[in-house]
Length: 184
Image 1 (cartoon, rainbow, N blue to C red):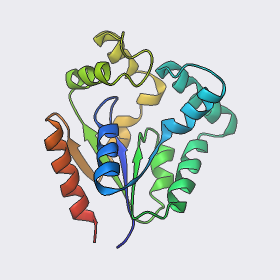
Image 2: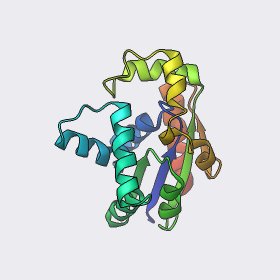
Image 3: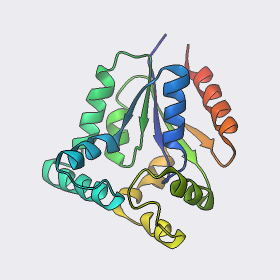
Image 4: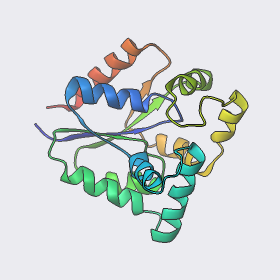
């Protein structure tokens, strides 16, 4: 069996994390998130994990160590992973895709959902400290921040699209179908 690497791109709360967790739990996939390396740095510095702080540390790292710094880290981690199914959650920049496309078996997957559905999800998931108090207007403003600006451009390069406006069972079925399509 060849290695299958799904890279998920999508707007905030589109379902990338849920899809990743499902494939990890149900299909024993190795999983990686770009935000994990940022959360690690914030934790080490005893700085709250807010969306703003994650974006700031990302910008500081890229400005000081090059735009490709996180893409290079992710690419090496994925290349060195021995599992046959690898999931990358949170592709946001052209450098991410450019580097990952060099790895055999990489497939870019766009996960989509309407903004109202995504707003409901972000309020429920409580991933970042500032998500619970967020208004719909603030959520819309989040989409204008640097980390989110390139997502639509990157998503246009996706080989596969998953509409995640339905329930969990629909998402899981779509993921199982995607996996069947690419595993040999």
